[in-house]
Image 1 (cartoon, one colour):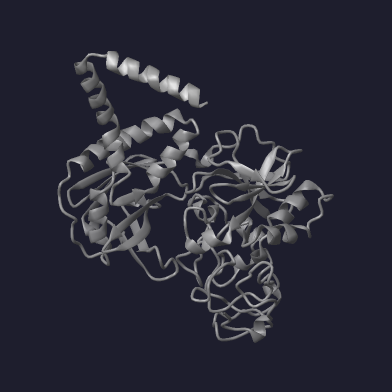
Image 2: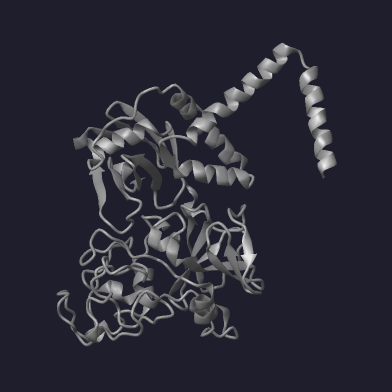
Length: 442
């Protein structure tokens, strides 16, 4: 191996030094023209998830994303190279000022890959790293959402604002998936993904299964969201019809672990599918790009009937709208479709799954592997009265502040917990407590 390397090095030197001096200079100059702007992109004050995803796609052979990357990154890199301005001063607690700073430090062409229309970023200011996103959910209505928080305190406070024409923000729709946004003399074009409605081509669905959406997670993983009418259950299946943006290690003959994402999949060779069954609890707590696809379900899907069947509690406390947004108790939030276990230790996930009978028919077995405790939360409420007052308990049922979200919250986010959790599922909670005797736990 060393001998081959020496021969290759010697050959390169002979070729290089055989060139006239002018050609060497030209060769070096061309290399600098190509790589210096790109080097500037990855040394910017603002980190953009877009570029991370694009380089991941390119490393897995996506020529199309290579074109998008150069279209976006190359001119942006040149701008950064010739930007000699000092670090700007702005009020980081004012989202409108932060928006100006971010627009000054992002490309003209911005590509929004996650399917819930989030454009993610991080930036450093005054020795603090902030993480956040733009959301283009209702860009067609002239609105842009901006939110960000101190990355070292993922469950602390955050800054948020919805800007529109009254804030001098103008949005022009180029087409259904492309928007030009103009703010304070800055212009950006946001390209949204069109993948959400693209059905699988090779995945064989059972008669009781229905395709819901094609998902791009912010981790770069592509998934199919499936609804099983027989078991009233959702689950995610890995999209293997394109390059998978991860490599895997084997846990045992049925389970694999993503080396980059730490996602755990159940591999069913008989049906040639991989079900998402586990997401790292640490990643969920950090609220990072590997916290699972629950927050990337496309926002305009007509899901009310399926959500109420899968999660009966969503019919109460004001209910949900056609797209799964809470109308009453948790107004402003959305039902999380998170049919996987947030695991701390892999062994605990395997132990939890041992309750599932592999001899059962596939629909029942897959739905067992992807069971969510909140499917059975408040299931008996139709027989009872119901209080929204969080100080009252009605036959063991209480309202808690984060209905619809995965069961991994810290005490600061949920003043009351459901009473059916176990220590194996939620290692940070006190084990097996009874709700009526355990208000305000943790």
